[in-house]
Image 1 (cartoon, helix red, strand yellow):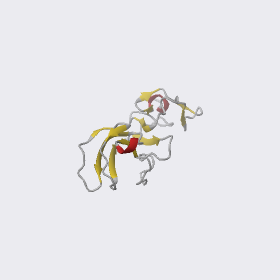
Image 2 (tube, helix red, strand yellow):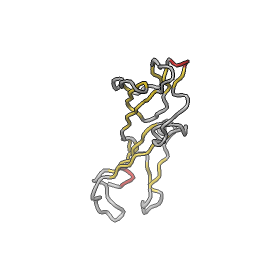
Image 3 (cartoon, helix red, strand yellow):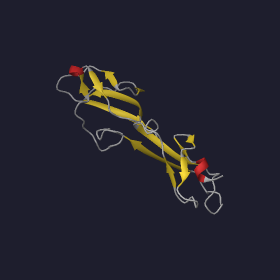
Image 4 (cartoon, one colour):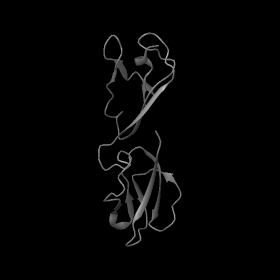
Length: 140
C-alpha cells in the first residue's frame, strides 16, 4: 500500500497526497477545524511501502503542537511565568494550554490539588501575596 494512502493525521486517513508521481514527498490540506489548537499526530504504519516498493522497517510517528497564541505553555514549555493566569478578581485560574489533557493546581507553599481533566477555567481560592503553580499534562 502506498504511503499517501496509509498516512494519517490524528488517526484520519485520506488527508495526505503525493506531491509528484514519484511520491517522495507528501502534502496535506487539512481544514482549519482539523488544525485546532492542541497536539497533533502524523503516523505511517509499518505495512506502508517505500517508493521502491520495499516495506518500511518501522512505523513512523511524529507529533507537533498548534497554538494560535504564543503564550501557550504547551507550545512554549520554557515559559514558566504567564501574566493573566489568575483572573476574575482572584477567584479563577484562566488556563492557556491547548493540547493539555489534565491539570493540577496549588498555591505556592501549599499542597497540590488532585489531577483533574483540563478545563479553560478553574475555580480557585488564591491566597494574597502568594503565587499559584499549575502543572499540565499533555501526551502526544
